[in-house]
Amino acid sequence: IALEVANAGLAASKRTDEDVDELNAVLADMDHEVGTETVGEKQDMRFHLTLARATHNSIMVKLLETISSQVELTIRETRRVQLYANKEIARQLWHEHKAIADAVADRDPERAQEEMRRHLKHVETEITNYLKRKKGGG
Image (cartoon, rainbow, N blue to C red; front, side):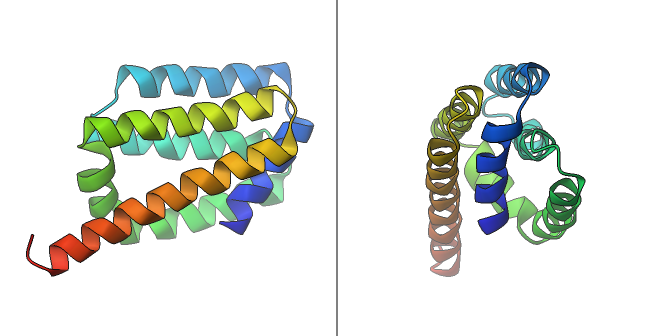
């Protein structure tokens, strides 16, 4: 969470117009593919890596790539089943990513960080709820 929040704030401060264009391209792809499990997960990862690249800090990018691969191995199926198969949740995730991108485009580091915190909290809540239901047999 700390890395993602830091990336959002740094990207808002360091981003170029090309970075904003790339974030918007990812959002357009995400919007087009809402509710598609494998693609949704792929676009989510692409968004966060694009955001990291907008920091123009190679260490931040490498850290995120390293952490992302570990996280992806651990929770891939949970994310796919709960977050991307459900169109309502997928649409909400899109809006959260859009809010982060908008704050970056507006060069507003504090808002970018807050939107990232909000997004990650939502993801954490959805995954926790899914795991509780699965453990309870439902």
